[in-house]
Image 1: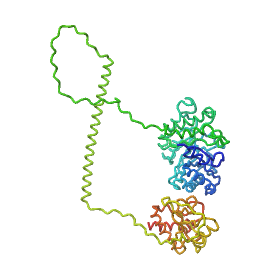
Image 2: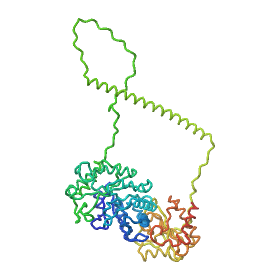
Image 3: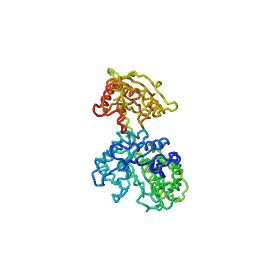
Image 4: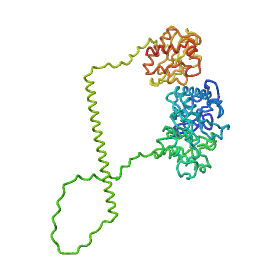
Length: 577
């Protein structure tokens, strides 16, 4: 629930994760900047954001990464043809999602596409036509999910305050909404109906939440930006109170619909004067208000709703069963003739209450009779189902047993020569370790040198020339098809960049730029990989050539073009499974 907009590229907007953790931040939102065009994301940008996302993840803080025209340059004019740009943008989004998958960020597709069209052509121009945004949303969502099925996709924070714009987007997609989360920015919306006052701003945020929830197919809502500046609600103290009241309102009234409220922003050095800190890094009252809002979460949590019983609030007991008529009592003995005092008469109000209670009792009796009839009907249905189950059980007991399909037989381990202890290791450096259940994929490499160069020479080169702890692969397949284990599977070896913690690295000896592995290598590799898939409970879709993950040539040009030895390897693995 407690989020903050930051800017890792801006020194004033780049807080240390430890400060964010102490403040109570649970998720940070920031833009992925990559001004390079072309078909591949800039590796330097991937490295930068990988380090940032990992730092936040290590502190227990999630990331929401904004993908916008700062992520892929060259957006067309508002009225132009966006088809080619969307394809390039979606491809880049998929590349980013694949590279950052170990850090589990969510991705926001564009930012404020419904912004006031008066901004078209200005320095801040995120405006998109509804049909254009629909296509961008669909293709980018699909690209991200293909790269990282676990990643959440978030609609670009809508800023117009007009849910009909989103409704038009959905209609352009044939009624579909390809995103996990609906997001909007309720600037100018009151946290309470009458605060700061009944005429402040453009309306009450509760109404906007309800409207976006209905239009957005009842998907979870994230408020990915909200803030206020002095002058809108008063001074800095009033801004702090505005923040407290916003979190209180969302948590106490709308936590069933709104999952995240990400405040804008960390520092005035990002956008002045919206920051929790000023440009010199000094906390403003809103900084402490954010921490206070975090601490008050338990007080603001809504109490469980208790259903109101039907009237009367305390139902009277059902009327007693009818009894035989009672004989009238004997006449009293005669008394002296005395003029009796007039009998008291019940006030009209008492009679009215008596009539009301009688009617209530009659209504209750009718309700109880209806419920009794329903229960009798359900008992009859259950009795019929019981008879059917008894018949089926009798049929099962008398019918001959049927053979169930057997699970696939476990594959025998291929012949593996463990040479881990024979290879050169750094005298002081060691690779990190992991548990086996962290393994999620298998990555294929080639040595890119002559097939006669073995694992021993590669290990020596990594240690002596590059200062590595040791060879970077887990298995090495020689030119004649021998399988050599070069690291334990619990070792986080260096072979696949950001995927190291979750990947097994297998290297084939040889340079497959113009040639392909020997038949013996293909056979041995298929046996090893099929066995690993069964052992680690993976699937064939978890096997990648390294070039399918990043911009590289490994495991050779022939992997996915020319001879396409990757297809041959996968076919042999599938046949074994």
